[in-house]
Image 1: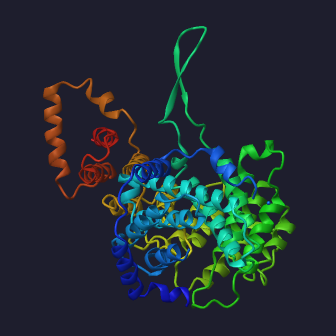
Image 2: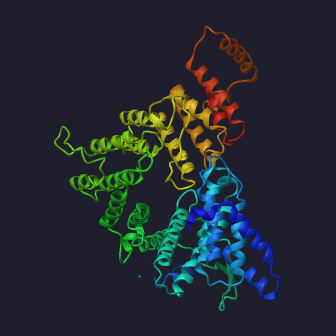
Image 3: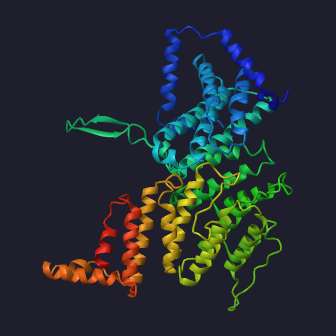
Length: 548
């Protein structure tokens, strides 16, 4: 019987009838104690020593049935809208019940970790609401998943098996464990699952007789998380040699380690060759003919991005970098050419390769290709010429003509990253528009994002940052100096102010009169209405006063 057959409704009925016939086990002191210990463990802080010890030696029919029917079915169905997580809750209850009777089954812990993983994904994928408002709940789910994976790895290491299917399953577990660790270290999750600052222990100094506080557990560093994730993923490469996802994730871990300052102090640091080899392997393993009409472009884009960054850093010589890019068939027919001064034009070459990737993205899912091209054009100079080119790239796909941010989630994009990109794209585009002094488009952007509270992580901060740039642009265009209101009116008598304000109001309502200051004042007043007290900073009121 195939795994697909296990998700049929008949099996759900069979499992529920079996569970009903068996009935609930009568609570006992031992069982209640096991339940409390398990619940406390899953919620506990992540102790780096326990996680690393679980992998120290690394160089059941009913459980599988429960997983296949409830959890895999939930993950395999393509959903376009949020749906209840009842199946995940049911699977979690069954798996917990199995653990209450014994903690030695690695597969039960593994399946439980996958259930938590699925719940995390469901919390991140639909909008940024839960990230913004229920972050602590997601953190608990992360810790549940990581602790469950740790127990699965420890239990698997204690057992010995020669069964190839079981070995493959264990290697799959390592890969998913690594993926969970990496995801929890990166935005939008940002290492919060590894934080230990809320739990301290009290110490008494013998000599001074004073009390002090210290962390109960020293938290994992980002580098340690990436190193452990890389090790887990690398261990699983042998059993899935045709999977591009594994070297792809490995390249991400290695790249983050390579960029870290700590890498230089390590006994066995990550080298350029390690990063390049991993991403090249991922590119080579991408199927030449995809089952769907949409090609897999992520490894190709990653190759371009990593090699470009290495070339810019000076860690990869230009000619060598061009040779590495030839690993991608999208760069096979693109040649690097010298510029007017006879120097190899690297940026032009990278943009030509990115253009090939853009052409391959016929359905317009891969927004990061256009964003990467915009960053290459904008470059470190950040001048008007670069800003014009960057704007052209960003308005091809990411921003519409009406300045609506339109970004879709590609199939292989990690849950939650969508809302990281929307924030990054907005911040970058606002900077580009400011350099171009594009007042009309920046005004449209401001209006579009005000009520998009579920499209951005920390929407309030993003709103404040965008408004700050818009106010700065209005001051620049209108030549409105800061503090002009106080400078002028502090020395004006009240009667004189009333007389002048009446004349000014009459002049302003005369449509035959025009003034760029009047336009700035109008925009500032409209911005104040749009803000509606969301941003507490008085900069809008200051602009109105100084312009008046």
